[in-house]
Amino acid sequence: MTKFKTILAVLAMFFMIIAALLTSFQIAIYGDPQYGFYESLYEKYHVTEELHMELSDVMEVTDYMMAYLIGEEDELSIVTDVDGREQDFFNEQDRLHMADVKNLFLGGLKVRTVLLILAALIVIVLSVWKAEVRELLTRAYSWALGVFAAAIVFLGIGFAIDFTACFRVFHEIFFTNDLWMFDPAEDYMIRMLPEGFFSDMVIRIGLIFLGFLLGIWILLRVWRMLAARVKKDGQPDARMGSK
Image (tube, rainbow, N blue to C red; front, side, top):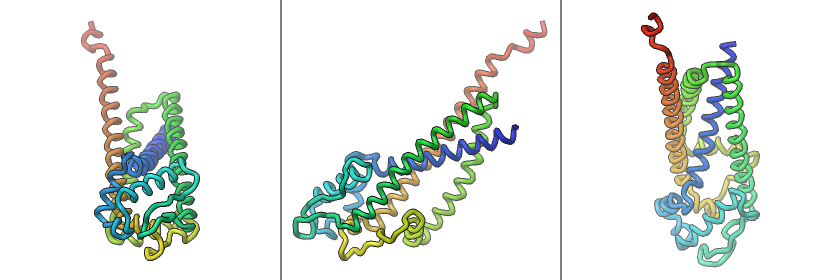
Protein backbone atom coordinates (compact mmCIF):
# COMPACT_ATOMS: atom_id res chain seq x y z
CA MET A 1 0.00 0.00 0.00
CA THR A 2 2.87 2.35 0.83
CA LYS A 3 4.41 1.75 -2.59
CA PHE A 4 1.07 2.45 -4.28
CA LYS A 5 0.73 5.73 -2.36
CA THR A 6 4.21 6.73 -3.51
CA ILE A 7 3.36 5.95 -7.14
CA LEU A 8 0.21 8.06 -6.88
CA ALA A 9 2.15 10.95 -5.34
CA VAL A 10 4.78 10.86 -8.10
CA LEU A 11 2.01 10.75 -10.69
CA ALA A 12 0.35 13.80 -9.11
CA MET A 13 3.64 15.71 -9.22
CA PHE A 14 4.17 14.74 -12.86
CA PHE A 15 0.72 16.14 -13.62
CA MET A 16 1.63 19.30 -11.72
CA ILE A 17 4.88 19.76 -13.63
CA ILE A 18 3.24 19.24 -17.03
CA ALA A 19 0.52 21.72 -16.05
CA ALA A 20 3.25 24.19 -15.10
CA LEU A 21 4.88 23.68 -18.51
CA LEU A 22 1.61 24.35 -20.33
CA THR A 23 1.03 27.43 -18.18
CA SER A 24 4.53 28.62 -19.06
CA PHE A 25 3.57 28.51 -22.73
CA GLN A 26 0.48 30.59 -22.02
CA ILE A 27 2.36 33.18 -19.96
CA ALA A 28 5.20 33.46 -22.47
CA ILE A 29 2.75 33.94 -25.34
CA TYR A 30 0.05 36.02 -23.66
CA GLY A 31 1.64 37.33 -20.46
CA ASP A 32 2.21 40.78 -21.94
CA PRO A 33 -1.13 42.15 -23.25
CA GLN A 34 0.75 44.84 -25.19
CA TYR A 35 3.04 42.21 -26.79
CA GLY A 36 6.15 44.20 -25.97
CA PHE A 37 8.29 41.06 -26.23
CA TYR A 38 7.04 40.50 -29.77
CA GLU A 39 7.79 44.10 -30.67
CA SER A 40 11.35 43.77 -29.40
CA LEU A 41 11.86 40.65 -31.52
CA TYR A 42 10.41 42.34 -34.59
CA GLU A 43 13.01 45.05 -34.15
CA LYS A 44 15.75 42.52 -33.43
CA TYR A 45 15.07 40.54 -36.62
CA HIS A 46 14.26 43.58 -38.81
CA VAL A 47 10.78 42.31 -39.55
CA THR A 48 9.43 45.66 -40.72
CA GLU A 49 12.12 45.85 -43.37
CA GLU A 50 11.38 42.30 -44.52
CA LEU A 51 7.67 43.07 -44.83
CA HIS A 52 7.93 46.70 -45.92
CA MET A 53 5.48 47.59 -43.16
CA GLU A 54 5.21 50.11 -40.38
CA LEU A 55 5.76 48.65 -36.90
CA SER A 56 2.31 49.84 -35.83
CA ASP A 57 0.75 47.79 -38.64
CA VAL A 58 2.80 44.72 -37.71
CA MET A 59 1.62 45.05 -34.10
CA GLU A 60 -1.99 45.36 -35.28
CA VAL A 61 -1.60 42.11 -37.23
CA THR A 62 0.00 40.51 -34.20
CA ASP A 63 -2.81 41.57 -31.91
CA TYR A 64 -5.40 40.13 -34.30
CA MET A 65 -3.47 36.88 -34.79
CA MET A 66 -3.11 36.32 -31.06
CA ALA A 67 -6.82 37.03 -30.52
CA TYR A 68 -7.55 34.38 -33.14
CA LEU A 69 -5.32 31.79 -31.47
CA ILE A 70 -7.02 32.25 -28.10
CA GLY A 71 -10.45 31.89 -29.69
CA GLU A 72 -11.55 35.53 -29.66
CA GLU A 73 -11.68 35.79 -33.47
CA ASP A 74 -13.35 33.29 -35.80
CA GLU A 75 -11.40 33.94 -38.98
CA LEU A 76 -7.74 34.70 -39.54
CA SER A 77 -8.03 37.63 -41.93
CA ILE A 78 -6.91 41.22 -41.61
CA VAL A 79 -6.35 43.77 -44.38
CA THR A 80 -3.29 45.95 -43.90
CA ASP A 81 -0.58 47.81 -45.79
CA VAL A 82 2.08 45.21 -46.53
CA ASP A 83 4.75 45.02 -49.22
CA GLY A 84 3.68 48.34 -50.62
CA ARG A 85 -0.02 47.62 -51.11
CA GLU A 86 -3.18 47.09 -49.08
CA GLN A 87 -4.13 43.41 -48.89
CA ASP A 88 -4.98 40.53 -46.57
CA PHE A 89 -1.88 39.74 -44.56
CA PHE A 90 -2.74 36.03 -44.31
CA ASN A 91 -3.15 33.57 -47.17
CA GLU A 92 -5.05 30.27 -47.27
CA GLN A 93 -2.08 28.19 -46.10
CA ASP A 94 -1.69 30.54 -43.12
CA ARG A 95 -5.33 30.04 -42.21
CA LEU A 96 -5.19 26.26 -42.46
CA HIS A 97 -1.99 25.95 -40.44
CA MET A 98 -2.99 28.45 -37.80
CA ALA A 99 -6.30 26.62 -37.37
CA ASP A 100 -4.20 23.58 -36.41
CA VAL A 101 -2.08 25.72 -34.07
CA LYS A 102 -5.22 27.16 -32.47
CA ASN A 103 -6.65 23.70 -31.83
CA LEU A 104 -3.33 22.53 -30.39
CA PHE A 105 -3.02 25.54 -28.09
CA LEU A 106 -6.60 25.48 -26.81
CA GLY A 107 -6.37 21.71 -26.45
CA GLY A 108 -3.25 22.13 -24.32
CA LEU A 109 -5.11 24.49 -21.99
CA LYS A 110 -7.88 21.93 -21.58
CA VAL A 111 -5.31 19.22 -20.84
CA ARG A 112 -3.79 21.48 -18.19
CA THR A 113 -7.15 21.81 -16.44
CA VAL A 114 -7.66 18.04 -16.48
CA LEU A 115 -4.16 17.41 -15.10
CA LEU A 116 -4.64 19.89 -12.24
CA ILE A 117 -7.97 18.28 -11.34
CA LEU A 118 -6.40 14.80 -11.38
CA ALA A 119 -3.47 16.00 -9.22
CA ALA A 120 -5.91 17.52 -6.71
CA LEU A 121 -7.98 14.32 -6.61
CA ILE A 122 -4.87 12.24 -5.95
CA VAL A 123 -3.87 14.51 -3.05
CA ILE A 124 -7.40 14.21 -1.62
CA VAL A 125 -7.28 10.41 -1.91
CA LEU A 126 -3.87 10.30 -0.21
CA SER A 127 -5.21 12.48 2.61
CA VAL A 128 -8.23 10.20 3.08
CA TRP A 129 -5.85 7.25 3.27
CA LYS A 130 -4.05 8.99 6.14
CA ALA A 131 -0.81 9.26 4.20
CA GLU A 132 1.92 11.68 5.29
CA VAL A 133 0.95 13.93 2.41
CA ARG A 134 3.48 16.73 2.95
CA GLU A 135 6.42 14.36 3.30
CA LEU A 136 5.22 12.15 0.48
CA LEU A 137 4.58 14.96 -2.01
CA THR A 138 7.91 16.63 -1.28
CA ARG A 139 9.79 13.41 -2.03
CA ALA A 140 7.59 12.64 -5.02
CA TYR A 141 8.20 16.09 -6.49
CA SER A 142 11.96 15.62 -6.19
CA TRP A 143 11.74 12.30 -8.05
CA ALA A 144 9.41 13.64 -10.74
CA LEU A 145 11.56 16.75 -11.11
CA GLY A 146 14.68 14.62 -11.55
CA VAL A 147 13.13 12.75 -14.47
CA PHE A 148 11.81 15.97 -15.99
CA ALA A 149 15.14 17.74 -15.51
CA ALA A 150 16.92 14.99 -17.44
CA ALA A 151 14.44 15.41 -20.29
CA ILE A 152 14.87 19.20 -20.24
CA VAL A 153 18.67 18.91 -20.37
CA PHE A 154 18.41 16.46 -23.27
CA LEU A 155 16.05 18.75 -25.20
CA GLY A 156 18.10 21.82 -24.32
CA ILE A 157 21.26 20.27 -25.72
CA GLY A 158 19.39 19.25 -28.86
CA PHE A 159 17.98 22.75 -29.45
CA ALA A 160 21.37 24.32 -28.76
CA ILE A 161 23.11 22.05 -31.26
CA ASP A 162 20.56 22.28 -34.06
CA PHE A 163 17.44 24.35 -33.38
CA THR A 164 16.22 23.98 -36.98
CA ALA A 165 16.23 20.18 -36.84
CA CYS A 166 14.47 20.12 -33.45
CA PHE A 167 11.94 22.67 -34.68
CA ARG A 168 11.20 20.44 -37.66
CA VAL A 169 10.81 17.33 -35.47
CA PHE A 170 8.42 19.23 -33.19
CA HIS A 171 6.17 20.07 -36.14
CA GLU A 172 6.33 16.53 -37.51
CA ILE A 173 5.20 15.19 -34.12
CA PHE A 174 2.35 17.62 -33.47
CA PHE A 175 1.07 18.22 -37.02
CA THR A 176 -0.18 15.62 -39.46
CA ASN A 177 0.45 17.73 -42.57
CA ASP A 178 3.17 19.89 -44.12
CA LEU A 179 1.24 23.18 -43.98
CA TRP A 180 3.87 24.51 -41.55
CA MET A 181 6.47 24.51 -44.35
CA PHE A 182 6.29 28.08 -45.64
CA ASP A 183 8.14 29.86 -48.42
CA PRO A 184 9.50 33.23 -47.14
CA ALA A 185 9.48 34.54 -50.71
CA GLU A 186 5.68 34.24 -50.87
CA ASP A 187 4.42 34.10 -47.31
CA TYR A 188 4.25 37.18 -45.09
CA MET A 189 3.60 35.32 -41.84
CA ILE A 190 6.89 33.44 -41.90
CA ARG A 191 8.68 36.72 -42.55
CA MET A 192 6.98 38.19 -39.50
CA LEU A 193 7.85 35.09 -37.45
CA PRO A 194 11.35 33.98 -38.50
CA GLU A 195 13.15 31.05 -36.92
CA GLY A 196 15.03 33.33 -34.53
CA PHE A 197 11.70 34.54 -33.16
CA PHE A 198 10.77 31.00 -32.14
CA SER A 199 14.25 30.34 -30.75
CA ASP A 200 13.94 33.34 -28.42
CA MET A 201 10.39 32.33 -27.49
CA VAL A 202 11.58 28.84 -26.50
CA ILE A 203 14.16 30.44 -24.19
CA ARG A 204 11.43 32.68 -22.71
CA ILE A 205 9.17 29.67 -22.09
CA GLY A 206 12.06 27.75 -20.55
CA LEU A 207 12.92 30.52 -18.10
CA ILE A 208 9.29 30.88 -17.00
CA PHE A 209 9.03 27.10 -16.59
CA LEU A 210 12.18 26.98 -14.45
CA GLY A 211 10.66 29.74 -12.30
CA PHE A 212 7.54 27.62 -11.83
CA LEU A 213 9.57 24.54 -10.91
CA LEU A 214 11.58 26.47 -8.34
CA GLY A 215 8.43 28.08 -6.94
CA ILE A 216 6.69 24.73 -6.49
CA TRP A 217 9.78 23.29 -4.80
CA ILE A 218 9.96 26.24 -2.38
CA LEU A 219 6.25 26.01 -1.55
CA LEU A 220 6.49 22.28 -0.81
CA ARG A 221 9.55 22.79 1.39
CA VAL A 222 7.95 25.65 3.31
CA TRP A 223 4.73 23.64 3.74
CA ARG A 224 6.73 20.70 5.05
CA MET A 225 8.76 22.86 7.47
CA LEU A 226 5.70 24.67 8.84
CA ALA A 227 3.83 21.42 9.32
CA ALA A 228 6.79 19.89 11.15
CA ARG A 229 7.02 22.95 13.43
CA VAL A 230 3.29 22.84 14.21
CA LYS A 231 3.52 19.14 14.95
CA LYS A 232 6.52 19.69 17.23
CA ASP A 233 4.83 22.57 19.09
CA GLY A 234 1.72 20.46 19.61
CA GLN A 235 3.57 17.61 21.30
CA PRO A 236 3.62 17.59 25.15
CA ASP A 237 6.95 18.14 26.84
CA ALA A 238 8.44 14.75 27.74
CA ARG A 239 9.62 16.07 31.13
CA MET A 240 6.16 17.35 31.99
CA GLY A 241 4.66 13.99 31.13
CA SER A 242 7.05 12.16 33.49
CA LYS A 243 5.96 14.11 36.57
